Length: 304
Ligand code: FAD
Image (cartoon, rainbow, N blue to C red; front, side, top):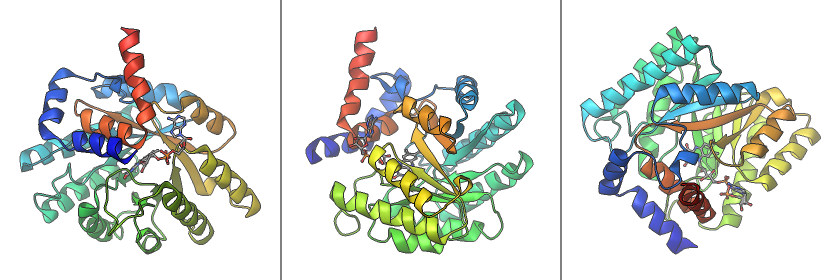
């Protein structure tokens, strides 16, 4: 349903809607997929998931960062999350977005902000820092920043979006880097990205198989797609790939029972846990990729 997808992506990019939603607090079902507005409630969520054998990656949501002040604030918030995680002794790391750290203001400034986070991560148990993939227009900035940091730090990684024609080449550049493999969440044109589900799924499987066979670095397979998860389970069995080499990841609030099941079967599992006031854009992207997520809104209305 491309029209529905376009509608929600347009909403996710609408600054006025994002700002208004921030003032309103999580609503319209977003509470089911956003762990809370502050770090305290989020730490409670992480503790509950840890008890089920699930690790977490925390994303302090933030859209439309346009000033240096906002970017520095985002950087300080991320450092504070790492400090709190470390002190609470929970199994969680952070996922960061370079747009939040000012990459569209000044690349050098965003690099310094990211480096500062990695230096602090060293103080807080050398915790892992994942750089999320964003829109294609930000890709060069993200990879250039990672290229500068990966020699100095071992605890940094990024995300490969299978919808990009160039995904295999980008992935192969990072043989020694921890990577998360995803299908891709943004709207990209046919000049850079596959457009059909069949093409994206097929490229995703190709990437997963190639990565698991050729790299010793850790790989996160981030999907809710049971067909792909089942395929990976069989593939690692057939190729004697150890469970230590990879994990599954899902987003908080989606297919939770399935997540518990996979963790219970002994697979490494990490839940992506977004939190914070800036929930609207994130929630609209989730509706764009799966309009059935509208059920979350209905549940919210009927639960009142
Ligand atoms: P889909 O193609 O959405 O779904 C495939 C099939 O799985 C569906 O047809 C259905 O049968 C089943 N299914 C899916 N969801 C459900 C559900 N809720 N309930 C029941 N069945 C379901 N994207 C980025 O661009 N950058 C990132 O940094 C990034 N990080 C991510 C981190 C994590 C942990 C995850 C899970 C996703 C991330 N994404 C990211 C989003 C990703 O790119 C996809 O947009 C998103 O995961 C949807 O694709 P999917 O693989 O889950 O499968």
